[in-house]
Image (cartoon, rainbow, N blue to C red; front, side, top):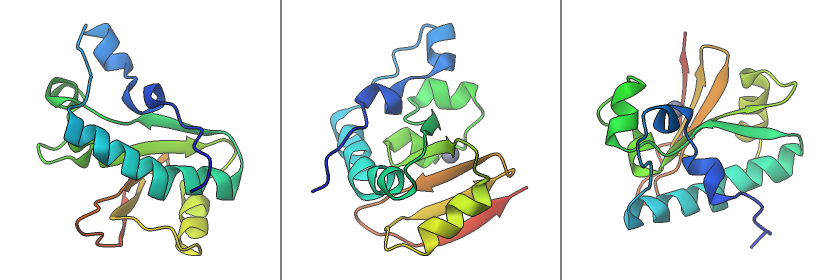
Length: 133
Ligand SMILES: [Zn+2]
């Protein structure tokens, strides 16, 4: 396995949680999902592109998800999804690189041409590529 340099805090830090004094801590099964997401998606993307990669939204507990207006079945709630940006790259360019690699994912979404949403579901990866405008 490649060396992992993601920190857990990158995946659970939330300004919304801080501001609202919410304890945004995942349960064990969400932690397992977060680890899978790092191992199979995030770390391979970071290694492949090799530029500063910033998670803008990772795990969201029920309350954080409600405040940000996330969908009730959001994969952010189970630790299966993150939103991220990569310095000096537009989302479509990041997505092209991922699609030309052998990186596994469940959903890969270009959201508003501002950030990339990626999810991983060890039970079933649908390999869906979507765009939200
Ligand atoms: Zn997302």
